[in-house]
Length: 113
Image (cartoon, rainbow, N blue to C red; front, top):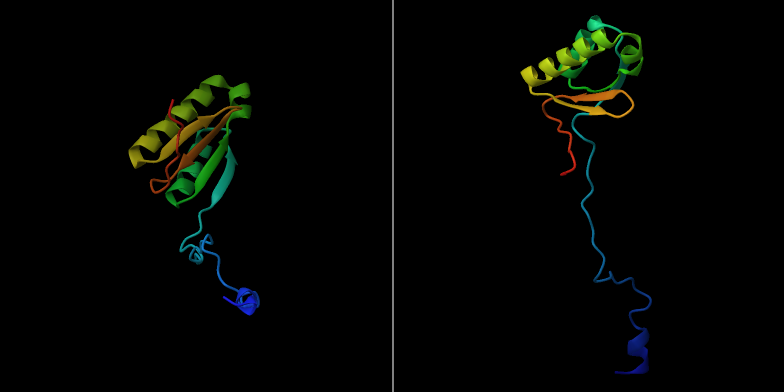
């Protein structure tokens, strides 16, 4: 091995053996929309159900309704649970009075306890 052989590969760019190339992902076929809604009565539950039927993920604010009318809050939440089980939607309650409802093709991953 001559002295010039050591400098031979310095000019050309040789891919590193540790480099990993990932294929480029194109645009998703369908875009997922997340809507933020608040519930003030039972009519709002039907409106939210229509959004989920269209394929939207809905983040629902229930804190104001819970403070205003506990009975209406419980009835609205039960109606959302019933609709979720009927249409195989995923529903989860979050702290601070929020609920997330997703259509049947979206799943909420819950931590294993």
